[in-house]
Image (cartoon, rainbow, N blue to C red):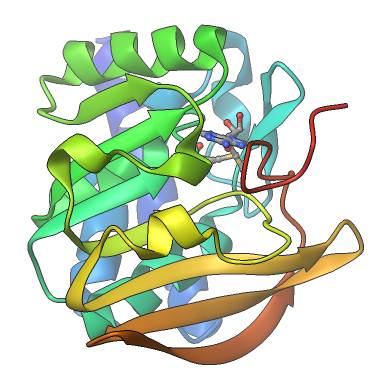
Length: 220
Ligand code: SAM
């Protein structure tokens, strides 16, 4: 009974979250439907679940965060509007929520995380939810060449510049959505692979944790 009550409460909070995303200008129905379906509270520790539907980033341990719902919706919209399906590589699995949203939209999802504790935590959540999301532990600035090329790449940590090795793993016509800048803020950047060259567009400013790795920021 208590579980049914909880499920109803969380569903109501998801509807409110989606209404708020609409007010903030997110209007892609595939994105909004995924936000209604994916149970965001399951990506939070039990003690923190009351905060799961607030529109803010939240700590997930190891100095990392689950991104604010608006940020996840914004990045996902940028991807969906330019790449309607196929294979997507996410860099920065974190809680696993963004990967689950991409899976719900219908992409074939690959995700890389560099911190072992977060890799294990998200892996547990994916198996609990029965999600077929392929995961790797390692430096995502080098991508995941075994499964390349990707129709889309989404980087959920702030980079000094789009990593060359990752760009090389995009399929022709593929897009990369990546926040680029320094610790003061990063412009959401979309790189589009056109034959041998890349188109570059820049949008709003966000603040992400750093992308740490060989083609990112140095550790520490
Ligand atoms: N997408 C995540 C979610 O839905 O919860 C949020 C990501 S959090 C803002 C950024 C993540 O990127 C952190 O988990 C961090 O450990 C990871 N990260 C940073 N540099 C990385 C790298 N080179 N390779 C893989 N993951 C990296």
